[in-house]
Image 1 (tube, rainbow, N blue to C red):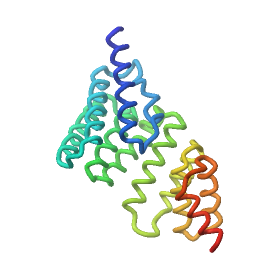
Image 2 (image 1 turned 180 degrees about the horizontal axis):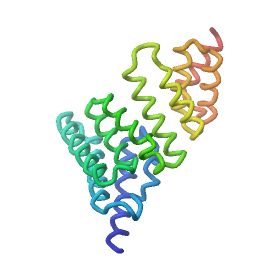
Image 3 (image 1 turned 135 degrees about the vertical axis):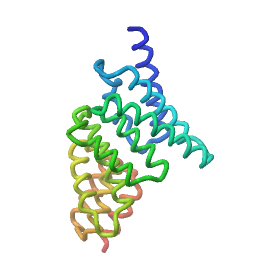
Length: 213
């Protein structure tokens, strides 16, 4: 019992550190994992913790080669956790983040697809699912050809519905609407972004441009 409590405390500290470094996915994304439920395998927890540690180190490393090597190790630990507990979305998301850091964005999207599939999505709260959808949208947009943004818009619309305090999600949605020629929808999304984050200069500049055009 005490070993489980100590392990859980370590996991929480590691995840906080991990997201302070990453800061591109809100911390709440993994909060539900408290971390893997009692039914989850202790060994899966250990692999997840180790993977989170490695990813944190990879993110903070200024040496590109070392960062890539650490990310690869984090991916391996995530895969081990997935093997032991494939229905928990956290390990799939950890794997996606490790793959992204290595430059494998398409594979990262595939891992997020699994995290958001019926197999694993039940382990995420609505807020956490909103965060994961935003991340997938961001990755999809980075690998999509110009004009092919429908899937990105679909993810972002659902993301902001589930979690309406992510200014970047609204901003990205507005950019996609602009690409699709939907000026009024873009204005509304930029306005929503500014309601969440009034000092969001990129959104304010884009809104001013749309209003004056």
